[in-house]
Image (cartoon, rainbow, N blue to C red; front, side, top):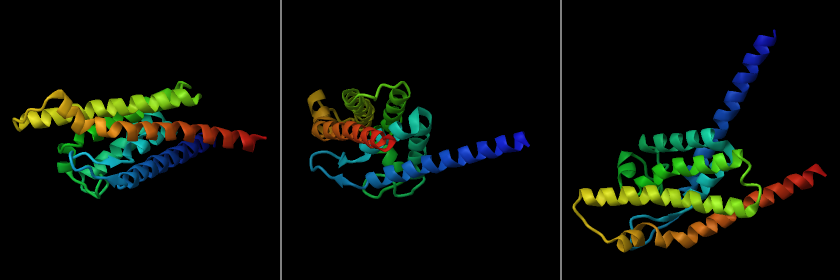
Length: 195
């Protein structure tokens, strides 16, 4: 009887985790549609990376990475999950593909930081958000450079960063501040309910 209960509890836990992973995948797909195209770069401003921070925070490193993988898989399969209501392998192989792959590392970093208790203080949560964005930039820039080298187009480092990083810095600092504020607010609400 105890064995049956353990199996039932395990199935229930897996189902709950699966629903959470899928729910955050859908959240990321929705946040991807909030976008501001920029005329001088093929990379738009979006709320995607804010979603990546939340996924890492709420799901942890493993489940967060799984949620991002599911997002990438469903988007690559053709569902309109990517920015601009787009889907398909062409989006992953396009100029924003590196950022999308960088989401995996960003969510993993935030998840690991939470699991180690490093997001308890707002300043650390903010710095973790900034670091996650820089990791995403790293993948985005590498992908962008390799793609344009493939097409024999050469850019200076300043031009590359102007296309891939500089326009997004203020926006992503704000998202990191929002992330830290969100964690602080959640903490205060939980403390208020405990009283």
